[in-house]
Length: 286
Image: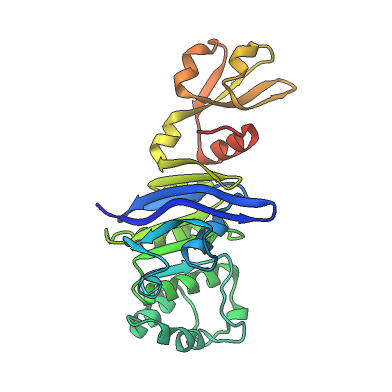
């Protein structure tokens, strides 16, 4: 099983921020969720994958090929869905096809037309007249119309209502019925990823804190809650994102440390959102 995307020791510096030794990979046939708080480095990483920014050091392989040396070949097989489309507002959806289709050898006009109908998009409508959810569907229609094998999604559900987000999950699930496809899904709305992601990469302040399977991450940590004074100073050191309030405390803990806690402490399974929040608060390495 080959990796569809592989980043090796990526470094990129800016004034006041840098990506530091970023490495992760995931195999064909799976969805990688790329999570972290706003400003953690997710969009910068995607721009480097797409050669919209140049690397300071490191290497990126897409479909097993160097993303700079084989850029044109790779981009033929990548579909990109951003938080906002880059199409001209005055274009109709037919204009979108006319403008983009010449750039792709495998553009399929019949498939584009079918997808517009399936997504309930009027081909005569202008881009500026589309809702947030409709624009997202348009970008996906474009991506699927040139037979993309890798979808790269950068905050596609930000600002969408629950119905539109569920529609997107259904579209992505259908796309992934082909085991030769893959998705990199960057978002800070982690509930979306709990439904569909196979792997998770967690970035904070430009550094990778975790990159492996979603299930392993969720099984590793538990939410803990208890009354004031339930933990001694040594026990508190093991609680990630420890927070006290008027009636007690809460936080996150590695499951290997559960036996060290008093029986009065309540534990429950964690979720991706809680993990991101607590590790961001605690500034610890997973």
